[in-house]
Image (cartoon, rainbow, N blue to C red; front, side, top):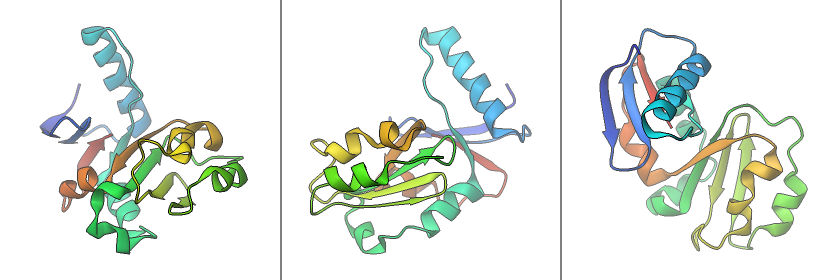
Length: 153
């Protein structure tokens, strides 16, 4: 596999690397297959270009929540949802929770945490696409990056 300068961040599942492979979906599929071959399970792997991560972070609709990064979550989706059930998401969220869907990125501010959040537990099902969620504290250390970097989420 054509991955260079690989760096991981704690045990978050995130890795930053350079690659000459430009097809992020094909690269994600290759990484998932390699993990399956070496560890016996196939995780959902999502590869983002650093520019995609920068754009998602810059579009954060809740900048006031960045001061408490464990409460701000970004779900990177494998595709933009075609028929997201936003009405049900709105009906099950706590009064303190806020969410926004922007293309392939779902933002959730959950000041009381996501451990008991009904909304957080049902994001993928109600959006109809798989995704990988990370809190702001885990995503933020990956900036600034060179434009050639890819991010494994």
